[in-house]
Length: 137
Ligand SMILES: [Ca+2]
Image (cartoon, rainbow, N blue to C red; front, side):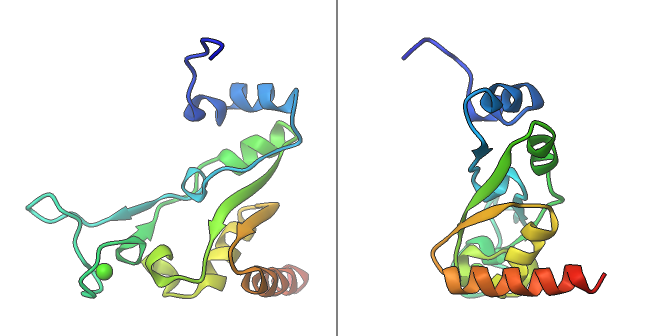
């Protein structure tokens, strides 16, 4: 409405994050801004149903290497809480082998400060596992 043509993608750059820090303490990006996924595409151009369940979704895709968003946000003095974590196999990338805790832990290991979850018991259990893992180091 103010005529600003920037998109969300502009705001997750170091310059955008520095601007956000002028009015906020943290950001709440969609998980793929931190770690996206990639599926396999067939010769017909359609994503392949890797697990053969008749549906094409996150369970047929694998995680890509993480972006620098968490590190960039932390450098800017911002906390990062990502959304939305769920205990639903169709929303969990194949490399986590249908284990929602494995997905949380991968994000926690990247330095994620908090999560938006539809299954808080799983988020807390995964956080507990992660903290034990950190103490063992
Ligand atoms: Ca499938």
